[in-house]
Length: 341
Image (cartoon, rainbow, N blue to C red; front, side, top):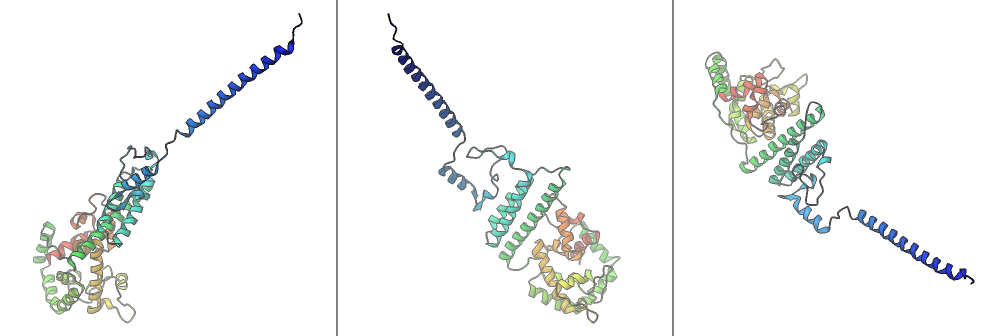
């Protein structure tokens, strides 16, 4: 019998092609399925989710996208399922805190005082969460700088609110404590002669001083300040080279328009120096917000008082008596001495 080879070969070829086609389809399906799984592993945020998150990022009108974590506790995931706390570094917190301070300034200028305070609140909460230690002195310096900036802004905001309500500067609080009692006793004993002589001289100058103080909207009690500054002597010269009734040093006098050359020194001019003093006192009160702290700054300079506030770290927004131990001895005595007068 003759074997027909061609009839046998063709069915084998066709069967082999079918098998190859099947394997190719399976591999292609496997690859497509694998790539589809990789593409769908990352969640896609929908428009509605974005809108929802943006709504949650507002509180009292303040846009919280300035600090994405301002309403998210540490380790807590936000509504989108993302968690970037590990990448939210201390440096980024400080940068966001500074941005909030700037936002607070813009809100304040627009008249949104409550929102401005809220922004400062958020800024302070951020710096509280910054980890500072001896290994990172630059972070500690930045935290201190921001703490001081926040304190200064809050003082300015509350001062503007007080001026808006009252229209003029509030009266100087008459405090009686051991420091004031000690100064009163000194005026009654060891410094009695100085006090009586200065009091007699005051009659010549106080009527004019009171009229200028009233024009500036300042408390009338400030008319007694020259008694402890110079004893009401227009040519009084201190060891620090402060001169005149109000004891201006040359640089401060220049800032407030007092002329000084080889022919004239307006620090000894009762009228000019009184006008300069009222301007300076008003500026200090606007800066610090209370008269006792402003008077301390008049004595030792505003930058020294601001440094004392900055170095306080805790309770840095409290009043003068909390700063008392941190001030130079002469300045620490200055306010109780004035209150004693």
